[in-house]
Image (cartoon, rainbow, N blue to C red; front, side, top):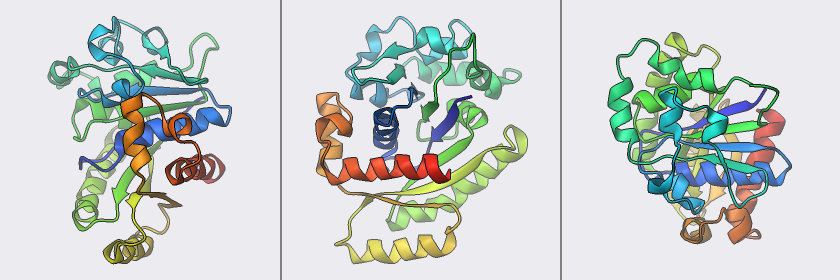
Length: 253
């Protein structure tokens, strides 16, 4: 049975897609079969692997409409052990179509069940920065939610409200869902960042990853070259940070 991970935040610019791609690549590097599922209409994850969203015959939208299975919509990437279910702008319309349909939040959960013995070790859902039908599907299907949080005032301030919404999901559609917080884009030279990190460790010590993802320009550059950090700049601080995250996640949960 695959470990299903949703990566989500209501705030944009927190390294959500970077975390989806980099964590997936590091897990694949460790020998695990990984499926990345792009649920964001902006399709940044899809493009980060060199795939043109508008040229895809099947996307995650077809899966959610029961017109394709997750496996039939998946495609190999240039990274060994790393596959992708792409997205495109059509998800904007789909988000409205699904809303209100009976059991709409369970569509993805149904699709991630093992079929015919074929399975992945890890499935990662890259969610849009909103709690709409697409994100609700991911949270209902996931075992664990990773919330990227920069050590910044506004990011931390919005976190508590988001956790309240997650609690509603936990009560209504996925009682097994757990969450972990991941500090991203951390700059040790920033005194305010250190103060906020101490606050996070005090208030969320049971759910905060020990791993910190440092600020690293190579992490921002790698999607331009359609490569995860493990291929684009494998010896950088960013690559080592996500390798440490992959190890901590699979060792301690």
